[in-house]
Image 1 (tube, rainbow, N blue to C red):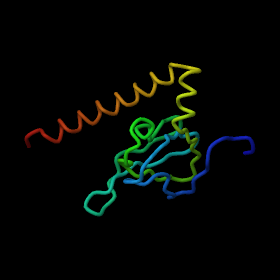
Image 2 (image 1 turned 90 degrees about the horizontal axis):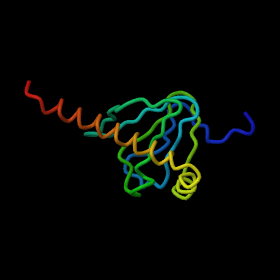
Image 3 (image 1 turned 180 degrees about the vertical axis):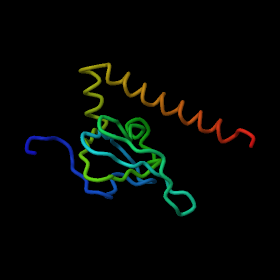
Image 4 (image 1 turned 45 degrees about the vertical axis):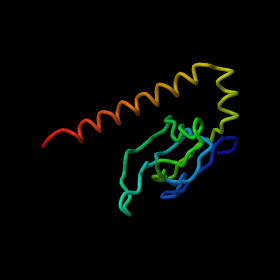
Length: 122
């Protein structure tokens, strides 16, 4: 696989850890990753992200602690994009920024739906 970009992660390898300060996002080039949060000392799976998805994008904007842990499921290859490269890419192709906004809007909508579902009376 010479000439390919991105880093290869082994099955079960942690890509980012909840609580760590982030300064980059990732594009999943191959494989799948699990996004999970620690709650009451246990890992709770939020979702599985697959090839072509962008994860960790909030770190590009706010440099806050990571809100979740990302773990490789099987072998995966992820491309790391830091803020400098992200901004340069947006200058070259402004539709990249729109795609990120679309992703974030979809995730906010999903979270809002989940909160509403959790607040429904039994």
